[in-house]
Length: 96
Image (tube, rainbow, N blue to C red):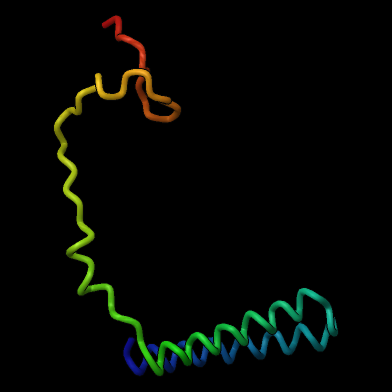
């Protein structure tokens, strides 16, 4: 994340904090307001953690996660007898 991205994140968390303070002034110490306050505090803590010690970026790991799936027709016999809900074909012999 760039410095600009982090500044934008801090600004957004600050805006959320102001919105939750407005909710507190309208609804008091309601459970949902306390949960929102807790969520905003957690966001602020996590944003600070990322800024202080950023995790490794995905771009370096992405090439290892690519799995090639061929377009060729697969052997349907391998699926005979399997549960076929939502697979688009039946596990019984075809009549065509």
